[in-house]
Image (cartoon, rainbow over all chains, first blue to last red; front, side, top):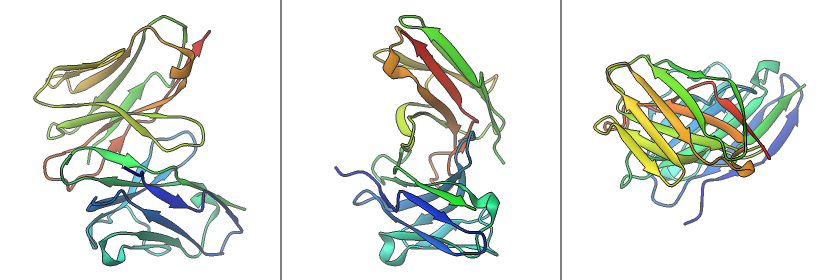
Length: 114
Length: 114
């Protein structure tokens, strides 16, 4: 089966600009996650969706970050306005209802804020 | 919430030697412990996982052990090869409800010297 797809792979923006990332999970995976991975650290959860509903967004900086998952498939994560400390890799992961424990990650989008 | 500590942060071994990476977790309710391998420019790849009802699991050269009482788990790689060089992350979650995303350790950079 095809893996988790993400785009773009790289993005460079100036601070205070806005940016959006896209994720297409593995077909049939109802649960979708966005993680932020700062250089040299482990991924940290930003938001978790079950179908098109939000399960956990407690660690999402809601003053500047937003995410949606229309129709319970693709998802977009937006940052507006970006700060220097948002420079990181943004990873999307999905989980199968059949293999309910395993999460599969996409390649990530590397964001650089200058 | 859950906190996962991972050691060492870097590990260098000779090809053919064994490598061991250790993690501790704080939430006794956690019951799912995956290990991910992340190569440069790629997303984390699930290599092995263990659930709390099992003490040890092995897959070819890779094994994971879990001590629930002490709340620690370890990754063992035997007969290391240069292609094992990567960053390895441990993680923990409460897997059965699906409502808790993974909490990751800070990563171990493994270098296998030919």
